[in-house]
Length: 438
Ligand code: NAD
Image (cartoon, rainbow, N blue to C red):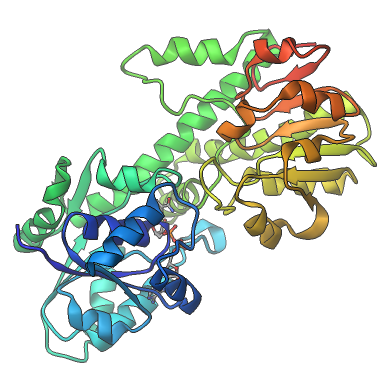
């Protein structure tokens, strides 16, 4: 394999992980972003996001010269013959995917591409978007060059983005051009990951179908969890028993306060929007969303039922990020929970190992941010586990419970060791979908 010259547009979770990993397997990569602060930080070899293992590979590959960063589209595009688009596609009105960043990226490319190129769309985009972007690009091209498009959706998970990129389950390559498809396979070949070659529209759909399926699995087990509470069963045992069945599998059967993050919520809504637009009913997705929203309300409702009026009560909230090992607050369940608690005039002290800075920008000063779990717990009437950070599993609960006003825990992630908690003296422990310990 010869090393390839690649430009990556967008240095978010996906673009940055992709760029770094492509440099790691020997390619020459320039990452471009319009965010000057991000690029300056990256040039100093510091990661703008919390992502395990990322900064090490950033430093390593920057020092070989195979990985560079710029805000200049002409500079980067002059360098590359493969251009990977990894800009954001957030949610806009009615659940529709907002394509404005992609449209701007297409304009930037049209202006500055100076040689025949393969444009790879890695961003999650509704079916038909690759074709739309190609037309947009071709319609505005400044130079006479040939453009081939490849749809290559991304499946990495925040918190394990680097490992997921280096050891992906599969790489989807959707293209109607055999040469372009072969070239992108060649680019990824050192990863030794199975390829699935398909047409562009199917590639686009695979991403939405995968995320919607995983989100539905979570909502399904949460629906079962709620029933378990009503009938006195234990959802952890139920999920375990289900997971042994190879047709079901044990992954994504963890009951709790539901999914959040920058992908599942918006992708399920975008797929639902497509189904409505095409007049093809898909009410299962509506239920997936409804159950998810309900799970977060349920946690607060449980606290209200146990504590009575929340006005003036002090709640310790452990975890703010939408999942462990990330500082990303996009659509984090903690946002809704913090707002519901403070709307009921509870006083919330929150601790997160890495996400407090980002949480401040989203939740604001309606809650207090503290530097340790112990500090959050001081004088609390109840403690909520909102994100299942490993650090929380390892806490000295005896000391924590001792500083609380009432020894009550609501575990929104079913992540604490019930037996170990019971050894800490009197306690009330309320998990999700399991009998409470009182
Ligand atoms: P992000 O918001 O973290 O990063 C996007 C970056 O693109 C930002 O830094 C932004 O400044 C930059 N950008 C915007 N317009 C640009 C332009 N014209 N030129 C250069 N840079 C530009 O987004 P993300 O989380 O990395 O997601 C990117 C895409 O990948 C989305 O479509 C998302 O749905 C999809 N995806 C995300 C994940 C994930 O876990 N985050 C996983 C799989 C797929």
